[in-house]
Length: 296
Image 1 (cartoon, rainbow, N blue to C red):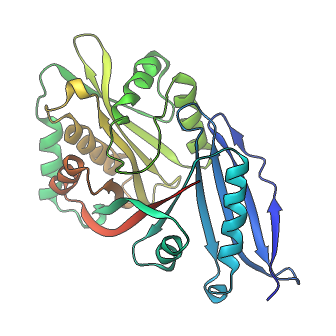
Image 2: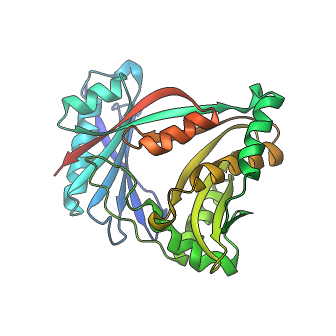
């Protein structure tokens, strides 16, 4: 079957990277599949590209995916990348395709869900108790959307809390955050029509942010919210701050978006500390996803 690969124009270019895209089709123009390659350009990740590849189920095992993959990998090499990462749910055709085409598994992620629409008064009281428990020397703050100007610098500085997040063998690099990037990330979420909620822990000794927990909710406040990340600076760990912030994030989600059905989080299997927090807060595993990497 003749397959045509067409490069698509993606005008979106941000301070952190750009996307390349391709469409696979028949000679008559009927689409068969697509590939998107996110090329990261910021210092610390300018060696990396991220692949998303989709083939219509009826067109699999006909070289459509292979043609798209070869095209995307060639573009990554041309861009000077040394690694391409891609993700697939465990046991799916995407999982098998990546493994069969030279990618190696570098990280296992467990997805877990908190069913807000099934909560009873006991669960509500349990979360409230965690939030209200004193943490001497610390206090919680929260905001919607972009970080308030007076907190922007210390919030950007606190992002290094994610630098040692377990990533196993993934060649992910170290993401450098500044105020410009923090503001740009919040704007990108708002431009998609979604709602960003952030809870942060503040050191009362100097007013600096020492940890944060981010949650993104659909614009209509319905469906599933997605946790984007929870981190505490190394020098402030061991005080239960991570669980405290995530519990407050849950409480605010229920208060501000009463029609939310649930909250979803993904955690590396090797991140045993955060998995224990999720278990304690009532999150139940739903499935696993595998991060694959191709070394160029």
